Length: 145
Image 1 (cartoon, rainbow, N blue to C red):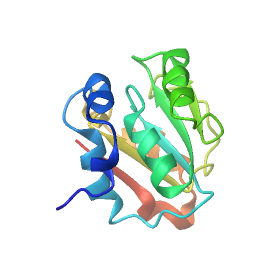
Image 2: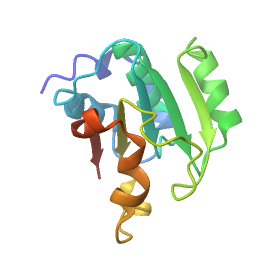
Image 3: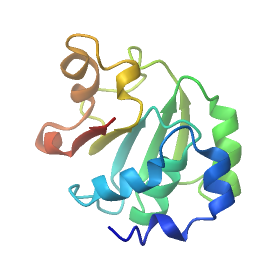
Image 4: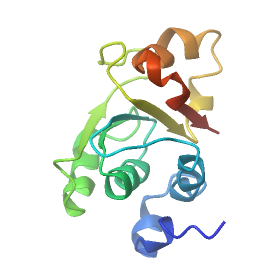
């Protein structure tokens, strides 16, 4: 894969904000199997320092709810503002078992390199993550660990 989208981003910025494998490249590959359209609401659960949220907002013109427990919403908001995406990304500080979203609120949900921290619990997917995605979009629920 050529990674034409993720390779456009400043190498130093990406390296400075990485929290494991290159999540933007992982998401770029995964996004080939998603039907993302302008204006969709996307949950980015376990977004870390927001690289995947930035990628989704810039590349697909979607609204992203960048949700993480370990990185504060304020820290992510500063990064989001530095990229000029404060109108496309909403930073949320929340624990994966206590998400502040209505069921069927999202058109799609992703979780890149974070699911293993909370998703190993029996029935996590069916009780906590999947209900957040609209029924007609259940195929838009993707996670990669």
